[in-house]
Image 1 (cartoon, rainbow, N blue to C red):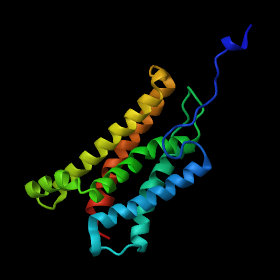
Image 2 (cartoon, rainbow, N blue to C red; image 1 turned 90 degrees about the vertical axis):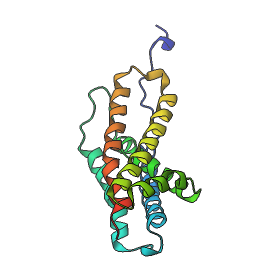
Image 3 (cartoon, one colour; image 1 turned 180 degrees about the horizontal axis):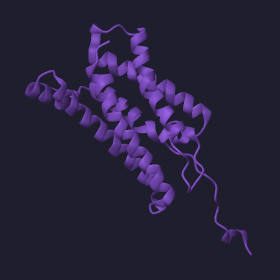
Image 4 (cartoon, rainbow, N blue to C red; image 1 turned 60 degrees about the horizontal axis):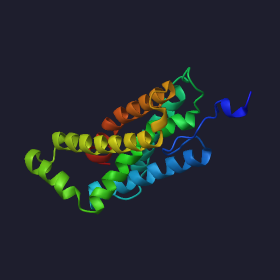
Length: 187
């Protein structure tokens, strides 16, 4: 029998941050913390000092929650899944939402997004919740699209369903964390 007829069963790394390597995992944690501090500074400006113990604590809590969930979730019966790769899929929407928020704030695109909501609702929880929904949904759509393009040949694969569900769980966790830690809670 020819080797060309035997399908390869090698595990491919995930393209999202922390895709299964220790270096990717550490880079993802560092990037998440730095992006969080940048987003908080863009949100709260001079009202908040740059590096306080509470701000660093707030930066670590969401990523720690994703690490804990990645370790707590059982491995899929369909494939071996490293907790670091699972963490990458879980935290991908969090990292993407932090990037999107920072880009929107620095490029003043937020005037078209944030200002109408603030004018309608004021600076309150309702406006912050709607902003969170906008940024997290846009980030989730971007991460989902990147994964769909990258893995278009595996759409019906049961492993892909498990991977996509991890992204959905991560995005669901992202909503309250983005609302509380980035927009709502002052330090």
